Length: 592
Image 1 (cartoon, rainbow, N blue to C red):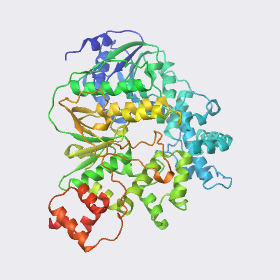
Image 2: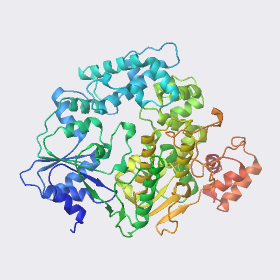
Image 3: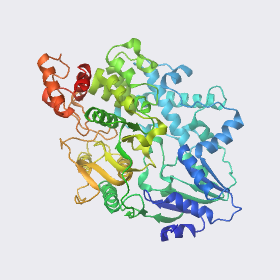
Image 4: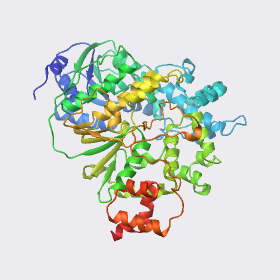
């Protein structure tokens, strides 16, 4: 195998180094060749981001005959040292809000659901501390992580109580009184300052390292190699830090991507230049070269910024492609209909529909109505629940039938290659690649950045968060190997529209803004608050009125003639979901 000069320079290097590798630049190949040229008796540790990458990388090292290389994730390493040694029991899914409230016997002060709001913040405070490099909870200011004014006001009022109960819950885990979380045993591992005993430690995906793991890595006496892409940091919400910027090591670049060609490389570079809107002195750390060639078209994917954006696009896909066969969701479809805290779309729907006896989640069941849930969401900044509420407001009682339609088309994990279309959020497809990629219109855009700059006197802009939004768009674009379909609203103004493999998707309403709850949206009135994506319907006043015989006849005729669902919905003044439900009700698919 012929290596590039950049790869050869890395392999021939000595001492601690950092490698800034653009998407698809062959970093795993480079790391394997680096390990192969070290002394055979060397003990080498390769730290990777998740279990799937660990299994794949271990096989590649074994195939190369490099049995002196051990591949681990940070958690698998910590698990072996901490959980076995202390006989801890691990809680796989973490603690739900209502479970923390019960475990700590939390008390409110008369404010509605105060005990649950406090529990939610305790959960986040534990995550903040466990991912930090600090030794005590008191060494951090949890308020630094809270941005919503209503949430900040609540946390300020309960701050000492939240911190005290956070310490109490951590103490219960430490003593083995309750099950420990994955965050907890990783934190305890870092606090013990272990000497791992390796000659070389290779740290992959360094841009998304937690401060806790980075602290442990830097303290090792081994030769250290850290690999990543400064522009692929997308886990700031998990308190990750860009370790490539923190590592004072000699820098090497891998700038040629073998995944895609010059067209997509050029667009990726233009997207990164959007950061200059936030920092006039911004310069990309490495120039991207597209060295890939056109490949056979096998895998097609639709990628979104948010779960809501992806589900709405999936609904559009299955309703407007009646004869399409199979689809696949990265991470399985069920993971998109449940929040991390355990609540499901169906729980939120049953609250909205006042079918309280059907609500399974204790937190949702404690809410009197949707307004109370929305108040809880504002005080906790619970993005997942907020997105669920948006879906329910959009499709109401049509949600179960629509989700069932999606599930019927969904293939199992071992049949992903059989899917006609793969759906994923950017976070779930990190490290993946597809021949053809279509983006949902829910990412940050240059127009949105300019508007935020103009309105910055009304908002306290978070530059790191906005940079991460640009990173998300960059990561999405660079999943494509051959063809990319991108909404015109997401294209940088300077991009060359003549590109052969970058296809521009027209957006019907050019005034639409990305669906992104992390970016402030100025509204005149709370009732007018709206978040829109590509081709989402506008509000139809008669959307849920009873159907008449004339409307049924008109619907049947348009469906028989092959009119798109969106066109039928616009003509009849209904939502697309309502049209789909009525088509099924009248069994039109059977007749036509």
